[in-house]
Each structure stands twice: as structure tokens, then as C-alpha cells.
Length: 126
Image 1: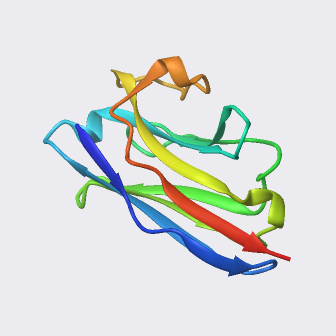
Image 2 (image 1 turned 180 degrees about the horizontal axis):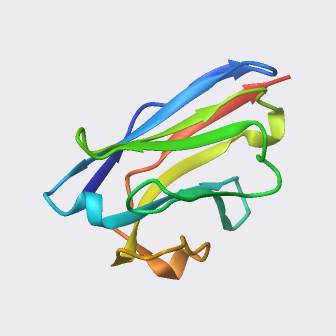
């Protein structure tokens, strides 16, 4: 599975943006997907995850209630809808596929993911 994230951008605080993660490969629908972000000088942190069939979603506390992850397996794409953006959301965002198929949950550690997308910059201005 190869993943490619859509372009991020510059957004004012309080604004919204939707990122997409497009996948190639027939087996994409077998894997959970996670979104991570990395701010300068910080570790790559889990943001949101969705199981292979979209049945369960997970969010970091910092984005809960503001971000929504979803997927369309027919189109091989995962979305991250980001609302009420804050300056602290500024980071490079990455999508990645779980290393194991058909998992009932989504792990949050980066070691459990493979097939990372290229990363996309989101900057939220105050």
C-alpha cells in the first residue's frame, strides 16, 4: 500500500481544512489508518485512527470534538476533517497504514504503522 496525503495549507485560527490520504493497492481496505502530526522539535504524535472497515475511530484528546476521521474504501481514501483549528495544530501531518490487517482497534504508536505518506504542512495562524 502506498499513501499520499493531500496538500495542507495556511488557515486562520477557528477555520477548517480537510486532509485526504489516497491509497494505491488493492489491499488498502484491509488496514486501519492513522493520522499523525509532528511539530518542529517534537515527536510524531497520534492524532486520529480508523479501523479497516470504518467501524471504530480514535482521537487524541487534543483534537477530540474538533477532528473527524472517515474513510471510503470504494475510493481508497481516508479523510481527516479538521474544524476549530488552533495555532497549536500547526505541524506536518502524516497518514499511515496499520502494519496488521483486520485489526479490531487502531494502535497509536508509530511502530505499528507502515506505508507512511509523504507528510503535508498545516499552519494555523492566530
